[in-house]
Image (cartoon, rainbow, N blue to C red; front, side, top):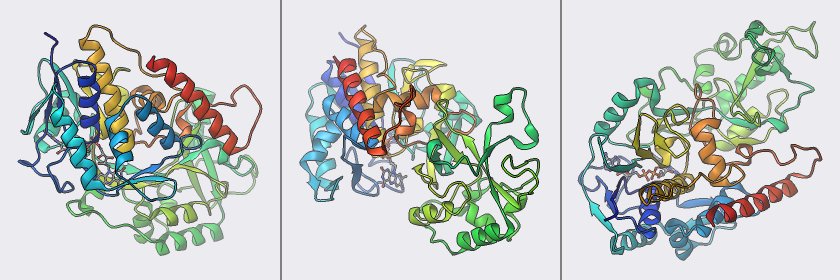
Length: 443
Ligand SMILES: Cc1cc2nc3c(=O)[nH]c(=O)nc-3n(C[C@H](O)[C@H](O)[C@H](O)COP(=O)(O)OP(=O)(O)OC[C@H]3O[C@@H](n4cnc5c(N)ncnc54)[C@H](O)[C@@H]3O)c2cc1C
């Protein structure tokens, strides 16, 4: 008899993983703690509950990375996209859904599947044997989080994300910005030039502080508290503490010489640090923020060199349990120290309903293939699923790892061998290449 796969968490990832594995002929036990144990965000006991917005974001599979992920999930027979399509609401180019009937139908499909059984209990410890996928999401129960922490180490499990905005490298004006690490620190030239620096005059700095103070901010959700700010203060809160706080913190101008104007000492400097091995993404150092998205774009584009910046993701601070996947997981999403356990969904450090469901689909397929004695390779990095899994299991910088949405900055550059094209054409080239590679991988 085929061994069973146990999946903990009936959210976006767990639901998709259960469907994928059961459809490959592997019996699944889906463990869900709701309704016995509640979270502050879930309202129902349904699987795949959308806890906040009712949108799966862009459905454009030709020029948008999340739309491409929709396409890959549909092509792979995913349950979430299929059901979302059935309960679609008018929302322009976005895939918005009627959330309650959507979740009810996902639940009904999973419960009706002859190979899926359910257990409505909290799992409080990482299991010592069997085949498991942990997909307990950003609000993993405290008991299980504690068990993960003791298995992986305190440094490897975060309870909050503190996300600084991430900028596409190609959109940074290198005529203004220069490469240099503070005091040229580092053994190699690469290390000595690891940061990008944006110089500010006194007038620019003062105007920037005014803009930060005036910007619209978001509030914490119920159940989150500002006490969690310790050690990761939002940039606007630092500005509120005093107009000079940032100039003595993340924006201090010391140890840096402007390569474009060596004789002019900058009054303040904003630094950006490489965010992925490909060097296509840079995060703005120390700029985690609770500003509203529109305000972030407006304020950050006043930074010299970032006037035309395009953002792969904007900043935020949320309650979010996630592991340091680049150090803990192998390319099969298995915990290196306990390979009978996979992780999937938001707890792996992807961000969003779609990304979480996609990682569930992948983990479900990988686990089922392994149980059936025919392990599969991860999808190639040219695909949206492959780009995401490559990022979390090794492509991302482990030291500064924070949750990530799918975006074209995670894909191997398409114009690497020369030739430049317009942004829309480039995105289309990415999605054409991805679809071909994904179809080949699936077959
Ligand atoms: C307040 C809040 C708002 C959000 N808003 C959005 C948004 O608008 N758009 C967006 O794309 N993403 C949003 N997210 C992120 C969102 O949670 C994820 O995108 C997605 O739900 C993650 O899917 P998942 O399957 O990894 O986790 P979840 O969907 O959260 O599923 C995890 C499941 O595991 C269960 N569980 C937890 N611990 C245990 C345990 N020990 N034993 C058994 N079961 C357990 C939980 O009850 C839950 O059902 C938000 C997150 C939060 C916390």
